Structure formats: C-alpha cells, structure tokens
Picture 1: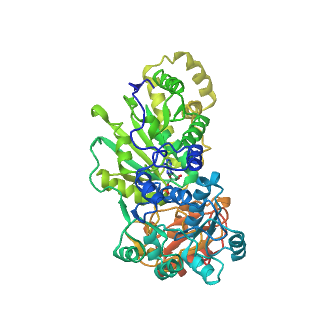
Picture 2 (picture 1 turned 30 degrees about the horizontal axis):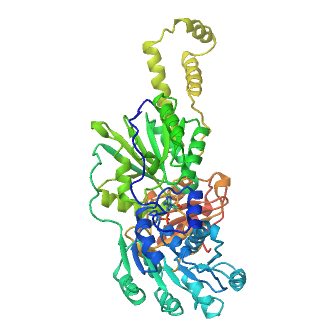
Picture 3 (picture 1 turned 180 degrees about the vertical axis):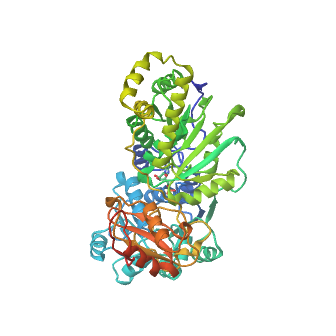
Length: 567
Ligand code: AMP
C-alpha cells in the first residue's frame, strides 16, 4: 500500500515500567515477554501496591489487572523466604487459578518465585507435597484453600499480601464466608488487594471488613475525548484464543482491506502474527518498539512502495504514525483501556472517508468490550466470524466479477476455437462451468477451508449474574459456548457422544434437535464441540424429550450416545 506517510516521533508519553520502580528481575521478564508499556490499571496500581498500600480496584479481564497485582506481589517477596507462603491470591475458578499462577510464574522467573495453584477437583496429595516443600505464592480457589487451612497444611501466618481477584464472582458463587474465614487466618498487618469487575454493595461490606484505607482505582467513566468518527463501522468478533489467527485470516479475506493496521499487545504477538499472516499469503510487516529506527524506516518504505498490505504493530510502535487512506483498524486483542480503543480507531474514517474497526474478543473479554462501548460512546456490533460458506460465497462473487470484467473489456476471440471444439462434444453450459471452475481456482478459490468454531459470550456474563447460582463452577465451565442462543429459564446440559472427530458441528446438533422436537433454534443454548463429544444446553423442561429424540435419530449418519451431562 502506498498509504503510509508522515512518520512522527514515536517516543512514549506515559510512564514506563522502569518509572513504576519495579525490580530489575521483573523488568527483564517484562522485556522478554514483549510488554512495551504499562496499561492504565498497571500505571495506577503498581506504585501504591509496591509501597504496601491496600487497594480496591474495579477492572475487568483484558485490562492487564493480573500483572497489576502480580508484579507488586513479586516485588515485595522478602529476600529470606521460608517454607510458608508470603502471598495468597484467591480466585473464583480453577481456570483462573491456573492462569494467574502461570502469569506469576512468568513474571517471577528471574526471582525464582515458587508459585503453586491450588483448587478443588485436582488430587490433593500433590498440592500437599508442594506446600510442604515450600512455596512463595499460593493461588487458590477459596473452598480448597480453606480445606487446606483446616488440615493445617496451608499456613497463612507469614502471609504479607492477600489478593482477592474477581471478588464479585467469588461472592456470587457463595464464597463470602470462606473468604472471611481465610482472611481471619492471615496476619492483621497484611496488605489486602481486591479486584472486581463490578462493585455491588455486598462487596463494599467485604472491603470494609478487610481493607484498611485502600487506594481506589476505577476505569474512567467519563466520555473519552473525541477523535472517533461516526463513519467508522465498528464490529467485534467473538473468537476462542486458539482460533484467532485463522479467524483474522477469514475476516481479512472477506473484508479485503486496501490498507490495514493490526494492533497486538506485545512484541511477541506482533512477530508471531506477522509470521502466521505471511504464511497464509498476506503481505504483512511487523512494527514494534524493539526495532531500530532503520528497521522501522525499511518497513515504512515497503508499505509506501506497495510491497506490503498489512501493518502489524504495538500501540507504542504505531504512536505517531500518520497513515493516510487506512481503511481498516483491527484490534487483535481487546485494547486494555477505552482510551486506547478510541485512539486506535481514530486512525480510520479520516477526512470523511469510511473506515472499519474490527475487534477480536475472547469470550471472557466481554466485560471489557462493554466498558469500551460505554466509555467511548461507541456502538460495537458483535458478529459471527464468516463461515466457510460465507467465504466461498464471497470468492464466487469475486470470480463472477472478474469474469464480467473480462467479458466487458477483454479481447476474447482467440479463445473461440477452444469453445467451438468443445461444444461439439459438450453442452455450452458445461463448457462455461469448467472454464469458471478453472478461473475460480486460479484466483485462489479453494474449498479446503476449515470451519472456525462459532462462539459467543458466556451467558452468565453481562447482566444475568445469577447464572452460576446452581453451584460453584466446575472444570470446563470457563470454556466458551459454541453458540449464542439462550434458552430462558432453567437449562439442562446434555452430553452427545460424538464430536469434532466425527465431523459434528453446532449446526448438526441444532438441526437434529429442531428437526426431531418441537424446539426452535432459539431454544437451544450454548453448544461446545469437543474432540470426541459435544455438550448442548436445552431448556430443562424439554431435556428428556430431547434426549429421547436424539437417541432415536442419526447425527452425521450415526447413532450417538445421548444423556444428561453428569460430569
Ligand atoms: P488480564 O487483564 O490480566 O487478563 O491481561 C490481559 C492480557 O494482557 C494478558 O494476556 C497479558 O499477558 C496482557 N498484558 C498485561 N499487561 C500488558 C502490558 N503492559 N503490555 C502488553 N500486554 C499486557
């Protein structure tokens, strides 16, 4: 693209991780991870937390809150570390326990931090042995933590910091008393940190009981400064992490941007996505803060010279780039703050031109996207990733347009002899079909595309916070449902003994259910397709009928085991 002009100074204006006073070991880990600058929540939270202040933070997933509390926890680990933990992080689910301990482990690499995730459902023996051999930070679900405390295996007398992460979720899941009991086991002099996506009244009460003079941090609620054009069409696609690069490829194929910039969070992501995109036949160039000015100049040269179509960049690297004629801005991740979103999409739709802003969101980033909509005053339409059928339709349309163009403008006479010869043997329509096929394939149309799983935001996110009332969430519940419809009222989850291996897709299950019962597609809830089985939610009142009907019918030409899910 010849659209990149006017490169300006790209130096950062906000504080750096160094400015936040982090230890060299942590700075080294962040550099290795490709984090270029702190997110707003990190900028605000890290200094008071490293000083030892209590903190009450309102922040959703996607803001960088895990690093905001993990870095100070690691920073404050004492030089002399005994066998008992120095910090305790409490989280609502085992998935989050694993994620947070992985984050602590990554950041604490050079400090040799010993981090142990502890959650229900896993064999307790290994957790007991690890605790005995000594740990620095325990990341636990409240139920299992209390269990271990009561057995005397988890000793909290040395704990200097307690973090309650996703505290609203923990309250929703009925952990209030467990939290009180656990906190009572820790020293009164401890530092207490509470993060929550929402601040219901019950949470205030919890905070009053356990926090002392906390610093309060909330994502800004005021309307973000302008810069956003109404001519920017804003769309978000909900995509599971593993399918993101495939989904991006699909979206780019359908959108065919003239000039696009794809924003990533880290240098590593920039590099690996650029490689993936180039592997898929796009002409992508990476731009990040780790590159020398000379490398950056070379990239910009290639963009101006039209030998590249996509720029994959971090916020820092793209700062100050003035890119004319940019048609698309893609957020490969939900930006960590509404201001970053507004700033990014302000790059398209300039000078009255139309622009498109596309955001790829993981199912768990729902709340952050909602916050962005509210703060940025934006309206972001959530769409399904184009299906293989959409893509094929689009490619056929391109082939049709190319043929029409050729019919209108090309000199075709020299091919007449081919058609005439063939028409002795075949119908003209057949000859035309074969010619279209060849033209289609030559234009890159192939039929070997893989379906990308269709997911939606979890039904219990957003307003219907009571959806987990039936009990504590168990393993796997954090996985994204593969479909968005939401049966009203109580739902039953059914197990179907066929999955991806058997070629089952969400549509097959919806088809079988609606075809064999009185239910409509809207009645069918979340669907998860796994390798060897699938889970599907239906209204509780119709569950038995659906089980009977599915047992009696064929799915993908086979009879499947169908029952209520007991796992
Ligand atoms: P969280 O909101 O804690 O779930 O973090 C969301 C994602 O942002 C995670 O994948 C982090 O690895 C990433 N992340 C956190 N802080 C930064 C940063 N300062 N720069 C780049 N990526 C970050």
